[in-house]
Length: 237
Image (tube, rainbow, N blue to C red; front, side):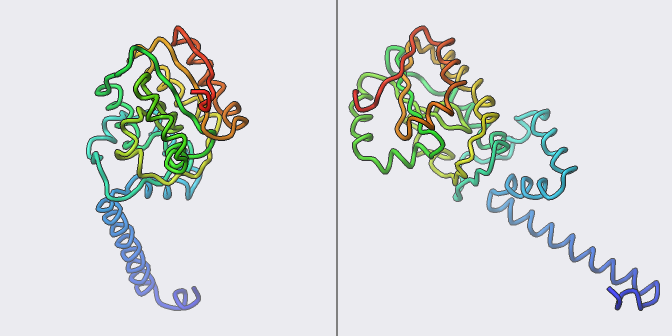
């Protein structure tokens, strides 16, 4: 500003220093608030996307750092929902921890049969809550099969965990890229192998067109890791 240029050198240094201190103080306060609210990851995402060089570094760290480091101080529950923007949210420590805990702790109930629900680009959990007929069907089928839900940022979620954090508490942009599906594909394969499901039945609870466009890589993987695979219409169950 002209006013700053008009001052002498010592005054300019003082004013610039005060400005830098105020800016740094505001950043520190923002970080503290994010830590307190459990939103530090979202702040890091936001800051990283403010400059190409920062975003490049952020991308490198996500793909090459030890996941357990990010998970270390990540709580198992939060009072706020997670904001999911794009495929980079796949690396959120809440999700990496959730994927690992599902593999380590979930025990199948059925005799090796999994009914897998998917919903194109829409949030399948919201669709289940909104459709009473589907909920009734699922309740009946639980007696015969294990039921899982395909979530783009998780892989396969056992339906028993549908109301637990972080699966029930997130805001989803509905942006599901092909790259994201490829990323989560390995988690789908790992789940099927670890749970030793021999038969997988795949069905959609929304648009069949979106379902087929999105699920090609997942379908191919399911055909490889399961001894039996088939599409089913949920209305026929």
